[in-house]
Amino acid sequence: MHRLGLLPLVKRFQFHAGHEYRHREFSPKLFNCCTLRWFRALASVQEFGIDFLNVPSFMPRIGRYFGHFLPTVRSVALSEPKGSCRQIVYFIGMFKHLENLKLLCDTTNPLEEELADDRTLVPPFVPPLRGRLTMMCFKRVGILKEMIGLFGGVRFRWMNLYYVDGVRLLLGATAKTLETLWLPPTDLHGKELVLNGVQTLTDDSSHSWIPSGI
Image (cartoon, rainbow, N blue to C red; front, side, top):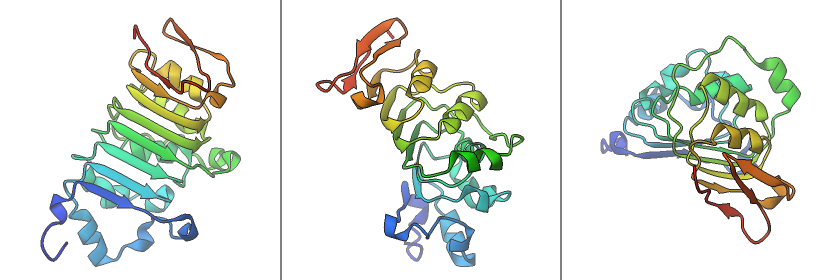
């Protein structure tokens, strides 16, 4: 595509590596002078996805690799990202027009992430985050707390939460904006859910909830 000059026209970028290639993390080691030039030519990307992103490996020159995405990216998907809570939220906060976020498959040791966190690291922007949040098999509640604290809350209108810790935290943060919610009933263990004065009960027959009066 670079030979035809088509890279600036690409709207969706996805770095995908199956679990058998988990050692192939996305880090500066993947780049040389040519591949970095091609990567930076992707100036129109709106949807951006990376498996095994190693955020600390790009610091502190992270803008050199991802700065060209800032004006256009609206959706980010991260599968098994590596880094502390603050580092990952910093990466998310680089995309000032970000509406949709997907976080998948966390395997990080919570104690290690807490010890490695840099409390002075502040995201450069507060993205809108008014679209969709999808989280699957993600247990790092610290990332959610940092997002809510550093971004002054989150405003997602649609959420798909599949075996996620911190569901109630997210529901409280999106109580004024949430329109559609999907989650398996086991996430709330059959307990009643109260959100902005609307009460419902998740069960095996109805996983999708569209709240009224919000």
